[in-house]
Length: 221
Length: 233
Image (tube, rainbow over all chains, first blue to last red):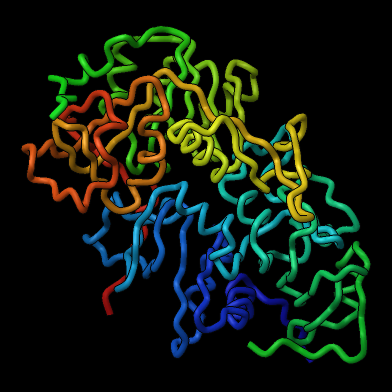
């Protein structure tokens, strides 16, 4: 069988299955943004962007871009019927107050206890945390979308994060190009494999404790 | 009606001096007080501490003040799109306090609402929470974050009237309403200064009591950072 590591679109497609009817969802920048394209059409979901919009729609048609209507990635967007705009304090009331049902964001590192690092590489990358610290500190339901290893081939699923933390013990689920993993009290629990990727492959690419319990099914995409 | 209208941006910035602390509305380049920023460049005031979610881009927004080295310290949540910012920060010329976006909004709102500080879960267990008071509420840990203290708040609204009432448009609202009344003097610039009585009181986002000075802004560029479009089928 051929080994098919997922690309970013594949990760987004798998995460889209976690989005349920009636959910308010906050999507981070990068892979998470793609998730909106693959959510089932027969369910009702509203996307929140922390710069102050609920009910985000697709990108505008050329010529219809509005500098006053953007998402958290500063991209021009549209709104859907039922959308609303609000100020930043109210936006984070939705987030901190746990009114948002699902948060999907990227990460540089995740530890087996659910710690996440995604905002700073000391001496190298100075961009800031934006809304990520508020999101991870408050959300009940956080899914991390990321590649299993970094550009140097090193695992991003670690015993302990080496980079400055964004939040502690908060990640519940991770979807990578290789696997779907649940963060449990005992470590990373393998739930699903990408098509053709073996448990051994995933073990090799996971530095933290990987719990393999019985047969691990392939992801349905 | 208590009249808040001033003739122009020059009058709106009366009392500005070196080493002041400013709040500036906007998310990215959306909803930034373009006129106030231009005037700050013109005035050449230095040693400023700027509280603003972002730091502009190299040639627009707060990037213009950074180019002239007028900013001593930035308090922001995300500063990714500015090379000059990064250079000044890494060389130590610029002092930077990075804080979570929701904390930034709430420290503004606390100042507006008369709270000295608020507890937030954001940043607990990270370097943002280091050295700050923490407290356990119902088994969850929170960090005490203090209200900002600022001399001027510069905000940008869509419509306003001489009473200082403001309405915002789309996501250009962002931090602007939270900064109104959060500094000693709030200066609002608007795209349309409309005749008194034409704004529906039901539709006003910020009542004039939070605004000390209002003026009709000029020449809004409203630059788009990431122009994303879809194709027509």
